[in-house]
Length: 401
View 1 (cartoon, rainbow, N blue to C red):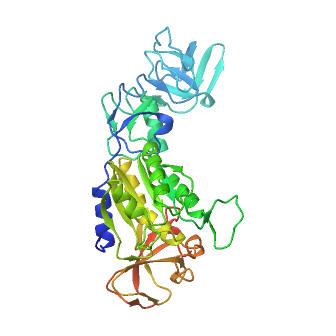
View 2: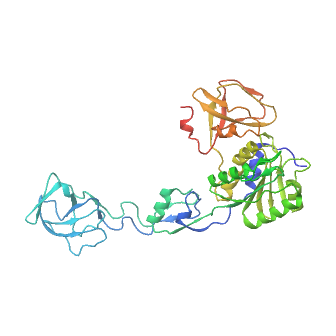
View 3: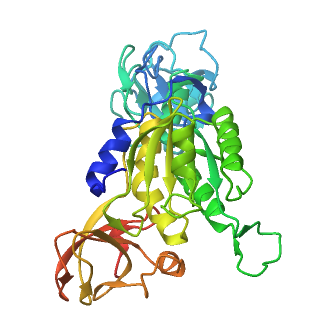
C-alpha cells in the first residue's frame, strides 16, 4: 500500500525518477523551444569584412569634392583602391574598397561631370561597419542549458550552424481507460461520456513541446490495459494514463503496472483535486497515472506532467509560473490536503470560477490559474494574499485589468 505523500514530495519524486532523453544533432527548423546541449561559437568575425551601412558613396578622403572612379554592389569585391580625392558608388552591405575613410549617403550628395559634391560635414569612419564589429571569431554566443528562441535560431544560422545538439521532441503515449468512454464521433449512449481528456492532454503536450501518441480507448479489463501499455512502450518515450488510477474494483492501472514489473515510486498525493495519482518507471520509461475526472486530469497534468516533460526534454523541470494575488472573497477548504482551486483575477482580486467539483471542466476553461491553498489552513479571508499558479497562456502583468 502506497503512503499518501505531499505535493512537493510527489513532484520531487517524479523529477528524481525522470532522466533526460539523449541529445542529438537536430536541423535548425526543429530546435525552437528545445534545450541546447552545446556551445555555439563564432567561426569567423562578423562582419568579416568592412561594409557599407548605407546606399551612397565610399570616399578615399574627407574632401568635399571627389572624383567618381567606379562602384561596388553587395556580393562584389572592388578591384581597385580608393585614393585621396576619389570616391565610388556603393550599396548597403557591400565591402568597402581598400582606402575608404567614410561613406556618405546618396541623398547627401550631388554628381556633376563625373565629380561628387558632398553636402554638410563629413566624419572619418561614418556609415562604415568595421570588420568584427558584431563579434570576433571564437566568441561563444550561445551556451549549453539555454532554451532556444527564434532569435537564437537566427544567430545559429548567422554563424553557419545548420544543426544544433538538443534533446528532440518527446513522444508520449496517451492512454484513456474506462468502459464509459466513447470517441467524439460516436453518439452518447446511456451512462457514457466523451473521451475528452485524451484531446485535452494532447493539446497540453503540444504546449509543453512534446508530441502525443493517442491510443484507442481501453476498456476496464486488465488484459486490454496490459496489451495497450505494451504498445505504448514500443511507440513512446513516456506514458500518461488517465482513469483507473484509484482503488475501485475496476481500477486496474496500479495492479497491471505491478504485474508488468513497474517500479512504482508513488500512488496517492495529499491534494485536491488529483489525489489518485501514480508515478513509476516501466522498463526504464516514466509513466504517470492521472485521475479520470476532467478537472483532476487537467490539474495534475499541469502540476506534475509538465515539469516531468521539461526534465525529459533536457530542461531543469520547469512547471507553472507563480504570482501572489489578493482574494476578492473568502475561501474555505478541508484541512490536511493542499487545494488547487480554479480562479480568475478581476480588478478587485482573485475569485473562484464557480463550483470546484472535479467533473465541472468549465471552471478550468474560465480560469486564469490555480489558487494554491496550503494543507494546514481551513480558510482565508477576503483580502488575504495567496499563491496563484498561472496557466501558461495567461499574462500575469495583464491580470485584473
